[in-house]
Image (tube, rainbow, N blue to C red; front, side):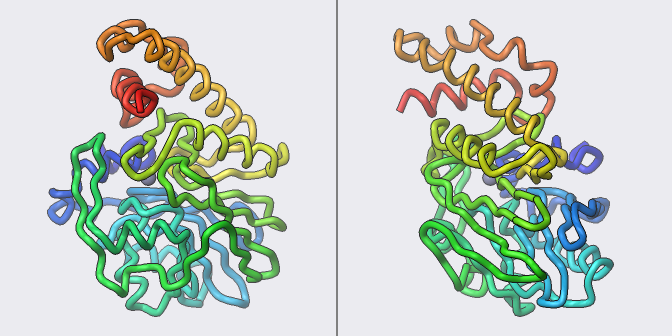
Length: 300
Ligand SMILES: [Zn+2]
């Protein structure tokens, strides 16, 4: 099932959850799908976070890299749209369904770039409390060699590619990427399209930060802007607005019950997601798990 529905499967934490078994996981049937978004920018999907790719005379700029066993397939998919190797690799955040290929691509010569907290988290032992999952420090070759605190611009392939840090959102190291001329934004895991999102409080994430990130992207986007979510199908401004409104409504309902001192069971039983379940509840976080995640986040 995980391979048949790449974007329902892929949600970051689901893959983190199975991490201990991931070495044995069979990636042989995963196919990398490529969608052309502009003359130079593509979205690629496989298993794990959605990839963004810019190609042109200056070389390949890649956003995220899914899992290590998929590196040859990702390189093959890139080879179909560019004869050049990956020159820059930007990690939208540290979760390893977005950074699993770092070691392979670092060894192949890519310059890895990320917000400074991504390097901190990748270079030390990690823990994702909601899934009770520990991660090991990555080897030096898999770590970002260029880090930034707030923002960074690349001038590549005929356009400015802006990497913007959005604080305390899905984690404490999220970057959104704006391809100005191509009119494409990669939102990383600050945007789950048509899936209830996971927000990693134990990595410094917060509901308020995800809402702020969505607002920031909505300000940058026009009606025709293509928005690559961390998970889920390609989206646009209307999709992101619907996501933002869903998250604001459900988290508002959960927050008011937290304030009243309600127990988790009571909040779940009140079904604060009911109106959204048809459209959003078929991904990896069930409605009840989504409410549980918000409850833990908002109780802090
Ligand atoms: Zn993630």
